[in-house]
Image (cartoon, rainbow, N blue to C red; front, side, top):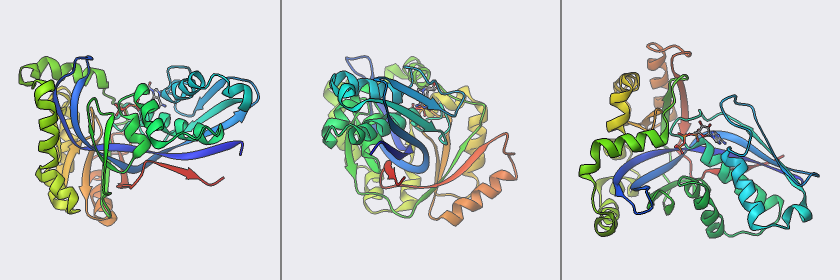
Length: 315
Ligand code: ATP
């Protein structure tokens, strides 16, 4: 095969807790991540020149070496120095559907798709563990994007414990087109405001993970209990992002009044989501929101919760 195309899904956080500071400068996190059916299409195609090329149809996405998908290919080239001599170079094409800078891990899922796509194109035979280890070198959210589905993520987000997937639930995603939130800004602001509440990660970090395993949220996920999951949605970063962006707070209030199972900001925002028990319920919420916000004011998407993040697309 000379090319592979993958559907690369976005993620939301059903739960995000900042535990404290790690010795490496990152935050220690306890999260529940979930793949959702809003996806980019990522294609890796063999080319003769021994180089990495990247094209993306979204003006806000870089097509140079700063693109996470480019960095994924460069990492494989560095680990397998003879590979381009044997297999040729690669052209990566990204068709963007996931909003950029939205807290939906768009860049991370693109990088995960390139790792998996190049593993196939270059016949590297990497195991899932090897792919996740490479992914963790590129970014904290990328190992989850390799695994997909429903998972607990700990450490700086790169340690993944996959859970039984959630069936039959949907989300309405909402994001104002003009707004994006920088993830480093959100964590820096959180540290400034809440460092005095941080726990000692070396001693308490593992305890928080155990506590999450025994929490009502995990019980709700285990029982596939949509209403209970909706009740226990939680994100520490809302405490800094919502006060800084009143427009996001207003959309959250509007979404929450539409009768879903629960409403939360995903990751560092600004995307908000409402969980629903059916596609019809999600469509009803979109209709209610459209009576308040025009398409130019607010992007709205209905997406199912997915059991995986990456899916090969038949040519
Ligand atoms: P996360 O939830 O992982 O924090 P995000 O959804 O908030 O990520 P992204 O859409 O991944 O944010 O983009 C953040 C920034 O990364 C963008 O401003 C963009 O310039 C840069 N970027 C690099 N590579 C990509 C990519 N493949 N797709 C989108 N953005 C990318």
